[in-house]
Length: 439
Image (cartoon, rainbow, N blue to C red; front, side, top):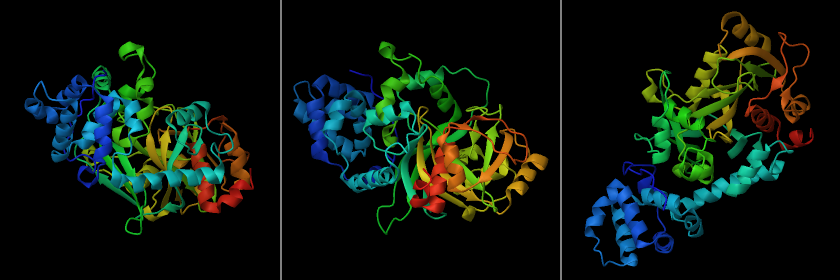
C-alpha cells in the first residue's frame, strides 16, 4: 500500500461546506477498494481522523468501519481530505466509482462543455501545433482539449473576460505536500531568496445568470517548493525508481488534488494603438525559457504575503507586469483574458489574455529601449496583428523577424505559451471565420 499524503489540512479547505457528497459512491469505493488494515492506515495517516481509531474494536467488520469513517469525516468536514488520501492509494477504484460530489456535477459539465466547444472550433490539436508529449499527456488522462506547443486550454471564453468577469478568492492555509515531495523540497540547497507565491487550487466557470464570472480559488505556496519539484520532475527519486512525473502524472490536471505547488501566472499579449502585436525576446537573466520569443510577457501573481505591493486580483497582476517589464501604464479596463491555461511538461497554470495599449508600437519601443530597459527583455519586435500576418508566424516553431523592425533581431524559438496567445488573441479579435480562412 502506498504511503498516504500528509493530508492534514484545516477543515476550512476549498468549499468544504458547499459540497453535496454522493455518500453511496464513497461507501462503495471504500468497501471495494480497501481491506480493513488499509482503511485503518488511511485513518491513522490523517491526524484529524485518528480519534476514530479508538472507537473501532478489533472485531469490527469492514462495512462497519466504512460507515463509521464516513459519518465521522462528514461531521468533521473531512470527506474531501479522506477522498484525496483514498484516491492516491487506489486510483483505479477511485475512477470507477465517481462521481463523489453531486453539487459539482453541473460545474463538471460546464468545464467539459467549454473545452469541447474549443475543440469543435479548431480541431483537437489546432492544426497539429500541440507537441507530441502534450498529446500523449492528454490522451493518458482522457482529456480532449485544445493545445498549442505545451499550452493547454482548461477553460476558454471566446468573448473574453474583462474586469468583473474574473473573481479571485484566497484560502488562508496552504495545501500539504505528499511526504515524498516534501522530502524533495527539504533537500533543496540554495542561497536564493524564498518568496510567497499563489497556487491555483480550483476554478469554477460561469454556471448560470447568478454567476456569470470565472471564479479562481488560490492558496499560499512558495518559490522554494515550486523550484525544488519542477527541477526534479524527471529524476528517479521516489520508491521503486519512479520519477515525480510518473507517479503524479494522472492527478496533475485535477486541481483540488494535484500535488504540485506551482505558481500562477498571467500571460499577456500587448497590442498597440496602431494594431501591432508586441513580440519580445527573453533575456539570459530569467529563470526559464531564456532566449525565446514571447508574445509579450509573463508575470507571477503576487499574494498579500509578498508585501505591500501585492495583487488584489489578476488584473492587478497584469497592469503591474506591463509597467515593470515594458515601462508603460495601462488600466485594468485595457486587459481582457480569454483562456485558463495549463502548461505541460512543467504543470504551471495561468490566465492568457490581451492588453490594448494606448500607444503606438514605436512609442512602446522607445519607452522600453530608451528609458526603461528591463532585465527580463533583451530584444523588441512588432508585427501587424492581422490573421494574414500572424497565422504564418504561428505555424512556425521559430520566430523569424521581419524587415522594418525597430532594431536588429535574431531568429529563435517561441516561448511555450507565445503561439497560444497569438492564436487565441486572433480568435478574440477577429472571430473563428477569419482565423480559419487563414489556415
